[in-house]
Image (tube, rainbow, N blue to C red; front, side, top):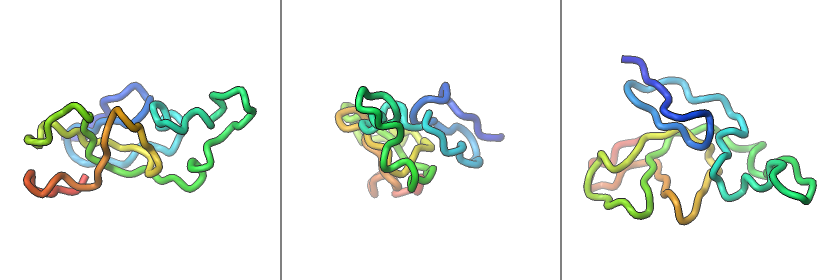
Length: 105
């Protein structure tokens, strides 16, 4: 079965099914990131976040801060930018915790 993206083009996209090519690097992947403020979403005239130029699209495991880390099903496999961070919302990791198998994203 081919993988399908479970997102509306905003923020990290959840991948379902088999691995696929990562989405293109666009600023829509910045949605929800703390530094998206610097992508023209400010009154300062700053049009691009300083991290965007060197960012890469990567696969990560995502879990909400409020979610127990006791089951693999509580983690979503997502494609996001390497610089993406959303403190107080989600944690992103390259591997699942060891007690859940340590699988790579």
